[in-house]
Image 1 (cartoon, rainbow, N blue to C red):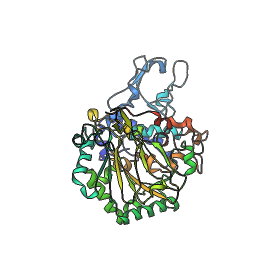
Image 2: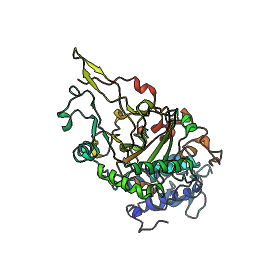
Image 3: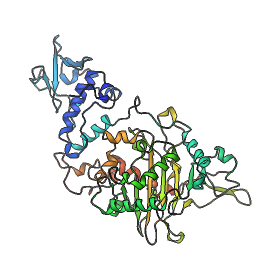
Image 4: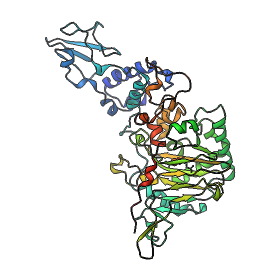
Length: 481
Ligand SMILES: O=C(O)CCC(=O)C(=O)O
Ligand SMILES: [Fe+2]
């Protein structure tokens, strides 16, 4: 039973929500502990969330055959038998109903009354879905957005104004920004029009870059990969071949705590003016060897939009080593419009904007639009799709910092970021029925062997982040004149 002092519970004033709903969830959590999810010892995030799970409002005459059941505001369930009797009732994991003395309740045909809407999820997949939808639902009342409409533009403008030490270059900017008024696509064909895209030089020091490379290698090669969502070549193939690099997340307990990297984190926090510890995802590392590339994709993950921690506001990509011009490795933005008038004043399109990897260089771009309607419905910015060209020799090391609209570390603390924190497990447990046996238990071992296109809809992380389609390139940008 939950404790009143629990801050999560105190927001749930209705005993029904607290005791009936929360206990029913807790019952189920036990036997899914093998999934290594955090135990749910408190009420779902808020009463608002609980209300979505108000099973008991309906008149259930059709289930009972006669009479109906109901609940009072204290959360006690009643069976109204149609003969004027109102009995307290209970139910079990299978939705079977019991009277106050825990005897089965039968309908007039002698069948034990059962309500499927009360049935507990039976497979880890169902459990996981239920757990996440209730426990990890967005809580509008208590979890605030860190940005409002306009903050997106303001950040890039502030970077241009206040961070000359990084020699910022504008690769693209909104048509109507203050900055744009002095430069248009016409008089500066190199500048893209649409989303912000800013390049910064020497943002990370040599030492910081080397440390990140060292940490990337530890995450990829070492045993200590507790927080490493490694997507290797084999899995890349399963992901539709888009992401053919080796990737890992910086372990919050080790990698993120490295002394030398504290300076990097604080520089990033100064740059974007949003708390790093709360709103940034643990840093993501990428290693490329010849033959590997990263196909066109967006860093915006649709399923995150309604999540507790919200979408990725922007991406800061850091290059950790130099890659010579001729050796590939560029990050390109094929959808950003870049145009200039030719002799006859009609519009000519240029090649996509590309950035060459250079040690310490950073590029920053938005993943959501400047407008945040109602301060709650965020819109992904589809213009910042990007791809990384393959390299022809050596290595390319890069890292990405993703900031979220809402508090990521809070969501992490209460077990609501498992698509990240379980790392490689997201494939093993990746919402994939095929990974569970008939009794609903996850198969031992590697898992992830059954990922295929059909699973896309049910596997939010893998598909929405990594699976892009080459025909994205077929859309010509809209002319800008
Ligand atoms: O390596 C690059 O240039 C791009 C990496 C990237 O797009 C990502 O990590 O999401
Ligand atoms: Fe990306």
